[in-house]
Image (cartoon, rainbow, N blue to C red):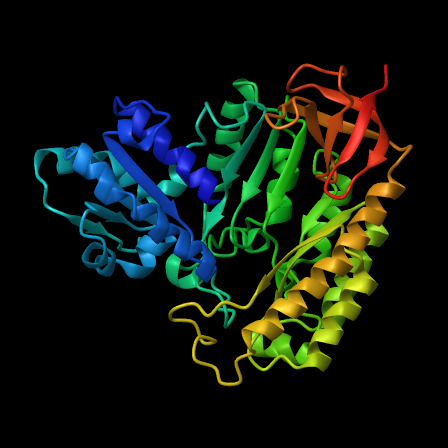
Length: 427
């Protein structure tokens, strides 16, 4: 989501007459787009801003801007903390970037623009025609979250749930498909809640069905889903709509019902398991990925064993797992019974070890299978042509095997590796 916001800001600046440069010291405008979901991400922001003194000494006229969630969280405090910073731009205000840059070049008065809006302007900025991948594009369908999980800063940095009108989304997708895009990923902090705030009958399953009717669109993905709002209607829309890829990112966060209640997740492990069974009943080949947090305040060894048991039972294709990180303003920030850092680290290592075995087993089981991939390009690291399966697994083609970017090709999987697959084109 932050990458998509960064693409939008770059596109806005290019339309205002700027062009991207390869090195910060060559820039007239230096924008740091930020994430505050975990403490580590926030630390990276201040590390990046540490370069400002040197950059602005060499180029005093440079305009330096911090945008995104840390900007929204810290507001004017960020200007006080970083004396070479010129402007702070909140998550609802990125559409103002060109205007603020122009203003800064006329007057060096420092600016903080972090007000929430009842209609987020940046939601209506269309996806750039020149994204990082010419064949795959992100499309924002909503912003914000109204769930207030006790560990999560998103409602404070992104605001409450706001959905875009369906017709506006459809028009944007038609435009980018006409420009050569084959696959879209629908973005929102909780895409399952799409349309509830519009009060006009809009829903996420309905949106998927309408998007599937667009000529030239080959694949539809979406992220992220909240288990509480993941329902039978959505499962049926996925199974009935062949353009929707068979992959769901469905964050579990913990396998302990006691911890799920403390997190204010709004579902039990049993609820989650029932939804996984329903999904796999209708779409047996579906890949399910998840987020997991270890070391939430009060998590006992028994609670953690429930998480390991859930991983064994559900057998996710992949997970993104993290140590609990207290976030400013959240209910969990000041909870007692914090788990010691060394215990968090040990539990995270055990989760990684278990999930690595499960993921590698999936990849090895895929050997010999025929999969369809959308070719995305050539890997800068390996020089191999690569693409993704419908279940979102990366396939690197054998050296010497290649295909045109944007094409859908059948490949035979010849090797399952730890994080990817190797395949060859079936002629």
